[in-house]
Structures are given as structure tokens and as C-alpha cells.
Image (cartoon, rainbow, N blue to C red; front, side, top):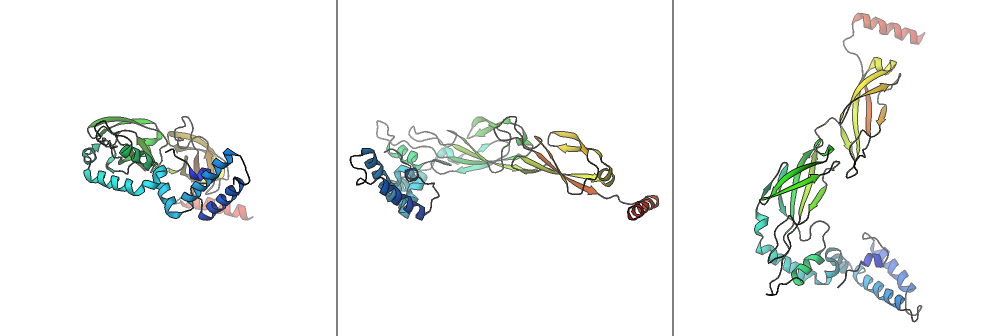
Length: 307
């Protein structure tokens, strides 16, 4: 049975409301009704698809099964029974650990993994049999987490992991976001009876160990500025993520004013050579522990401004 996207049939997004589904069905059913399109085979086919889509999406229970199991939604109960039976059988690979810098271990994932379709699982149960009649089971997906620092993901780099005794070398792209996941196809639990291995999903936790605040691809930083430079102008050295740069300060710079340094932010994920911006916030620091002479000079300045 081929997969049919019933949402596309009705011209809807997957988050469509019940009312939107009802309206779309009525509109399309009228447009392609056989009475209005006599001897039109294409219209007749579209009318059947529209009715089939409404049968599934127009019923809350059917829609829930379809969203979860795809083309095999009618076999939802049977799939669940098979999945539970497989879980009880256990999986020798899923009970073993793996190691690698920053890893916190893993857990068993669902069949099909992130974004997976239970159609694949159903086919692995009922559509893939060896000549001896044994069922081939797909291996379980594994979930893992890895801790990295913000500095780690400023540059693309490689790491070697030990997964169930197997050495795996992975590339971690620059610009990785906190909470982002990657999939390593075929590196999950081993399949049974010659079935394919599952996948390994790694979720990255990025710890910020820098004075910069990251927001998307932009970085934010506070630059302390002495009163005299703020008033008279001058030059200051400011920190960027990959070194210091000399910055010209305009005379009369106000406290809280901002400056944007183009291309001095964080690398854009999988877009080599592209960077966000660095936004600097000037924080004026007042002089402390003034001498008597300094106080006299500030008093003279005050009097000058008031005259």
C-alpha cells in the first residue's frame, strides 16, 4: 500500500483544525463531484481520494492513528502488540554502554526514531521474512546526550566515540545549538534475524563558559568604558570570540549605547564562512576614590556648565 498524504490531498497543513478539515473537504468534494465532472476519470479519482482523506482526518481517532502510524494506521493495534512483544524479548545491544568525551549515556528509543514512520516498523515485522519464515526485526534506536562547551562548537571538529565496543568518529559542525540532535544511521541496537540495525540519536547540551551571551548566531557582550573616554572619545580594545579588536569610541558616547560588529558573532550552522554579529553594550564606569584636586576640577567643570 503506497503512502498517501491526506493533508496534501485536502490542501492542508498537519496542524489544521477540525473546522478547517471540514471546510476543505466540502469545497473539494463539490469541485470534483462526478455529477459536475461527467466522464472525467481524473476528477473521479480525485473525488475518491478526497473522500478517503475525510474518512481518516475527519474522524479524531482515525486521525490520531494516521499521524502516528502513517499508511498503516488501520493496523495500529497489531503494531502495538508486536512492538510490546519485541520489547519483552529485549535486545542485547541496548543493555550495553558506550563512552566518549562528554557523553552521559543512552537510553532505548522508539521504533523508527525521531521523525520516523511506523510504516517502516510495520514492514520490518510483516514484510521482511527469510526463507525459513523467521521474522526480521529492526534494531532499537538509542538515545544519547553529549556535553560540549560553547567554545567547542565555535569550530567544526571531530570526536571519537565508543558505542557498544565500536569506535565511531563523528564530525561536530560549528554553530551547533543547545538541545540540537543528530542521527547516526545504523549505529543503534543490532537487528534480529538479519534485520537492519537501529539508529543512534545524540542530543547536544551546550554549556556557556564565556562572557558572551548567545542568541541564535549573534553574540552579546558588555564593554566597560571609563568616563573620560566616553566624553572625549578614543580607542579601546574589546574582546571578540576569536581575539581582541581595536574599537574607536565616538565622543559623547552614552551609557547603554550599542555597537554592532558585523561577522564577529557565532558561526552559522553548516554554512562555512558565515557568521552572526557581535553586539556590544557600553557600560560607563564612574571614577572612584577621587582626590581633592580631582574634586576641585569636577567642581570647576560643573560651574562652567552652569554659567
